[in-house]
Length: 241
Image 1 (spheres, one colour):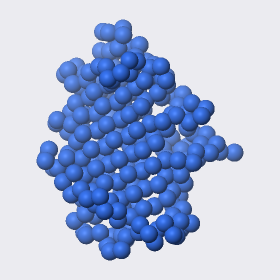
Image 2 (image 1 turned 45 degrees about the vertical axis):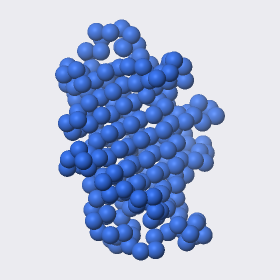
Image 3 (image 1 turned 60 degrees about the vertical axis):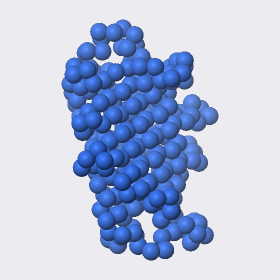
């Protein structure tokens, strides 16, 4: 496969990032240690119920996802996908960029991305995948070690679950939940590749559709050492017939 097509493969590997919150909250509720705090137990149970209901609602939709790959702020590639949730609960995509010919000419790749950026992008994709993979018992283990905390999300009725050392020593996963809306509002991952100086961040912002369905409106993955950023914006949600 030619280098100019690799960013699309990078996005395919990152497609599950928006669903990592479901893995984390389900694992949290399954940890008996949370029963030590009735308040924490009630809050986590509310998150689990909201996530389960929302997964069913989101499965009724198809939507479009605009992807932008940039290096140090310079746009290298854009692509447009039609997306829906498959039978396995994961998003499936069809590239419909060909119908956006004018857009591609304006923002498309003029030169092939250097090989080191391609390899770097593959490493970021692999790292992001490790945060979406289910790790049964991992949250319970980290809670016992004092590496899982429940704290205020910075506003009334907002809670944050902060998990440290989830995949790598020193990493942090923060999930923020609005109790009144019964919805996850953001997910942030601070991690790294071979060393902490090779920082990688993943930020997901959520929004509600008119019927109350919660969805990932924006997903941004940033490889800081090389300034490589992949941003996905999800729009045009339509109920499937």
